[in-house]
Length: 396
Image (cartoon, rainbow, N blue to C red):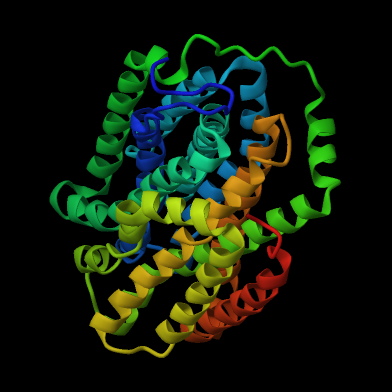
């Protein structure tokens, strides 16, 4: 395959085009995953229930996603990255389409769970493919593109999703996302040889659980995965309730909430490759604490209820904190084992379990007041940021 180095060696010219194409799948999955955040008030009226009840559509999706990454990513070591990516993207399209026809909130929660389970293999398998394809000194750039698409899907899901809903309704939104996912699936099928090459089947018969155990036996791995889990809890818990934050504090409607949340993901979409190259050049040990501290500061400031304009800027800075931390964790994870599927499967498991647990925990404690809940999350990530200075001091 021209311009791409299979197996992680060096190449004179490393093309990033395949990363952009395959990362489109992650973009649409995260678009769908977070397009519901601005819709909570509207869906509560639609289904005649509380916002808190509706809010469980988020942890249901994310916990299903997180649990099944442990299944798909190691299977990609055995059956090939291409098969897992395309199968999971197809299941994502199918269950997203079914969601457009639900008649009650409990049906939606259940289908969101199935959608998360179906889509769970795309992101970790893509990370495994990147680690197969690009050498470590270029991996930050490639992962920056991937996480930029993840952040972009989050941002445009929350904004464009609300706008589309105002035009065609939430049922049309889910059906449209399923259609776009199908188009991306067809594009990946057409580009199979250029992106995945001929060396696809990896016929390993190693015990998956033994691979997990071997990876987690190392203290460096355990510490990194803890940060993946905790940082995922922080960002998901906050983001899941940002729509309600703007609704209750500023009286915004669904479309206005979407515009307010647009800043979450824009830094990653625009700056992801640049941030990845900075990490490759200056070291992850310097940048990770900055990203965590930035996240803590922005949430503590959000809890003070400044003006609408200031809150919108803080949302963008919160997203930048994610972009300065999670892609860097992913690059570190790819060095834990030669079995990239197992290592990245654990990464995705802890990431999306954190996403689900974060939104669930905040939903459970929100009765103390949203501002106080934000403050508790902010203090927790502040402590983690300070500890990260020592935890990651030897990372390059």
